[in-house]
Image 1 (cartoon, rainbow, N blue to C red):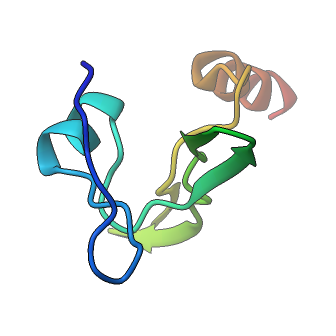
Image 2 (spheres, one colour):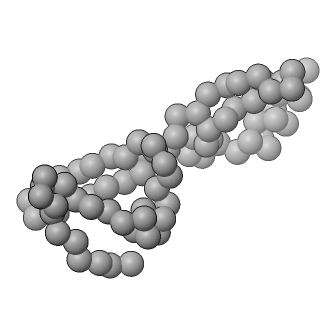
Length: 81
């Protein structure tokens, strides 16, 4: 998706809902902004997540770090028990 936008009266970049959805940005998700002469790159950072207790079990609420396979992690824990 490619659109043309202009800075608003306060020099902000208005990014439409359609652009955010296309980029996969979620509400309140941390973003990394890289500025270079003539361009700005905005990248979604993975959500941090945390451990919470639900129905008596401890569960991870965020996305898994890159390269982590949840099935392998569960099987490894089962092998230890």
